[in-house]
Length: 93
Image 1 (tube, rainbow, N blue to C red):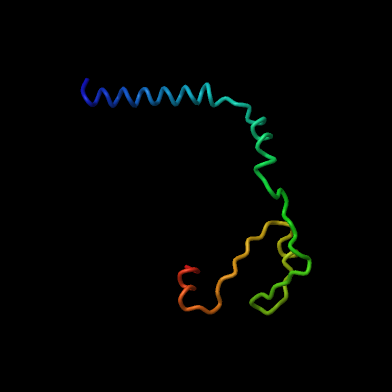
Image 2 (cartoon, rainbow, N blue to C red):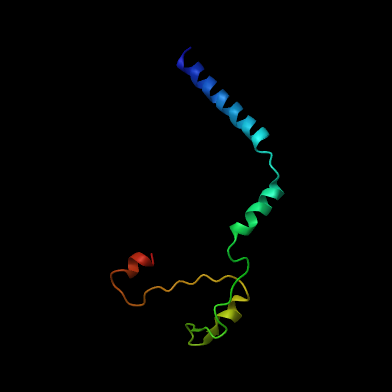
């Protein structure tokens, strides 16, 4: 066999093997799998309140309550540096 025939045979065997795996091995009970993974997949299924008294100051010098702004949704907060000539350009870029 020449190289083209060998390559074609290898690709054909690989495609048949993948198709067979997906057809026979990929047919699982998806709902059962979701139920078995669900308890371990989420640590916090609902947002947790940090504190009702946690307030921040916005750029207009107004006091903001994080619990009121988030409306029960998750909040990702990042506290960047305010004065640092060395790290700030790297960290905030």
